[in-house]
Length: 491
Image 1 (spheres, rainbow, N blue to C red):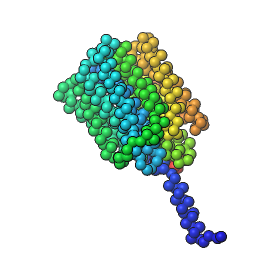
Image 2 (tube, rainbow, N blue to C red):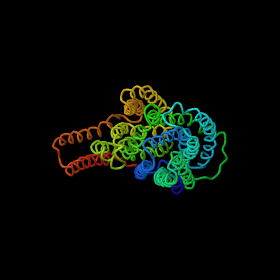
Image 3 (tube, rainbow, N blue to C red):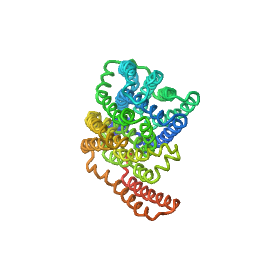
Image 4 (cartoon, rainbow, N blue to C red):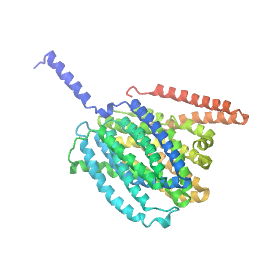
């Protein structure tokens, strides 16, 4: 039997159409566009975070600012349980183009089952915690913390869902412009009326509630009744993503909590203000990691290779961190005193230390996004457990020996362990990973040596500023050229 030309044409075009439709929408999003969209919005978010600290510093004392961040650390820590559910929702939603909202409603049920008992236990424990901390826990602060935990948790779930349906850039824009910007406004209004820590926490929770509504407005939300099968799909991923999220946040909050318990709330205030200043250098890394999680998930499910894209993403994620370290090392103290006041000058070495471990964090968050995309979150768990164990074992003795800065040294030490473990697993997908680490480091060390050569010359401030600007410009030209020459055509 012979086929006519028209019949052959229809067979070929049908097969071509099928091969194209097999590629998920999430695999076709632009890594460059979405990363930069998310990164630019992160700049807005980092600016808003600094404005928040300025508002807090205006109305509250340094010790009260520290108390606020200690309560906020508890909010973030508990909400990580729901963020783990959100990561499962994001992964499952990005793995299909149909009936994505079934994961949303099943995720809501899953989150309620987790949150309710945790909050009840937390309210009971808070009544007996005062003898063990360096500040007074009030009932109003506990209630405000519970409220903020609920709204922040829903925020994490809905944001991840919106990312999973193919809108990582939009979800980051809402988080950074609307939610973080709104937090500054609500903080200012609330503290203008009553300048207390409880009001500050409640203001944070109110903004998160508005953000949750926005995420839902822009996401597909056709009601599909939760089923046991869908819940089990989420559980299969969440059994790893929940402990990973919890361990990662515990790792980040250990510093604040340890400073509040073993040092002073003032040290906790210095630390968290420093984090928000340092995070400006982290904005692009965060944007890349959110996009990688969605795009690579779609590429993996569609059977596409992404080795070149991964290498380029890891390189892109570290573009800003090195010039930021150089700038803060030279002008950090002046920047802190100018933005806040002389009582924050002691935060200088906190900023430098945080920037140092953010180098490794850039690689960590992108690597974790890759493992989540590959449906292998279990590979993250061992690295997270190792980092938390090392952090817990070293934080107290280092605090005893170095004071508040001991928490920074402990974090850097444990981050080295985590990066080594993640890098070992990532070698399965990317050979010669070490080249991504040494290239930007060599450039930065050379520029840093150049600065220390000219520093003894006692240049006038204007000429010194021009020299620093030239050094950063040289770094930028080299790095942008490297990115342009190695950019995969699929991006």
